[in-house]
Image (tube, rainbow, N blue to C red; front, side):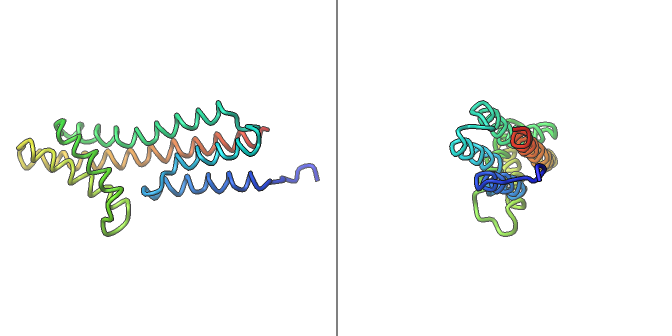
Length: 170
């Protein structure tokens, strides 16, 4: 009977936030990493910050910022690696953001990719660049966005593993 895992309502709540965090990372309209931080903070408040401490929550908050910041940075770097100018990189990030928040038909991921492409192309056209370079920059921005999605998933997975290890080793 000692090996029986007893879950409290707070454990179940935290696990729900972790699941929503993973889901939110896969569905870009939900702030996945932030949900994990909120869940850990609530858990800490209810359990007097045992086993998840304020330091643990601060680490999770930094990881969440890295995940979100990485999304925009990797999109810009993808555009830059395919020859985008500064205007194309800024356009890609603006397009990524708008693709996330505007109700674009299709999935949120489609909106994110479309917004990134259109933003990079728009930024390059604003600079009056050649058609071939404009399309190449848009493609680079989309590839950067795909890489950033994989990066955000990896950071989110690390956050979940971190929390679960804290819970299991208490």
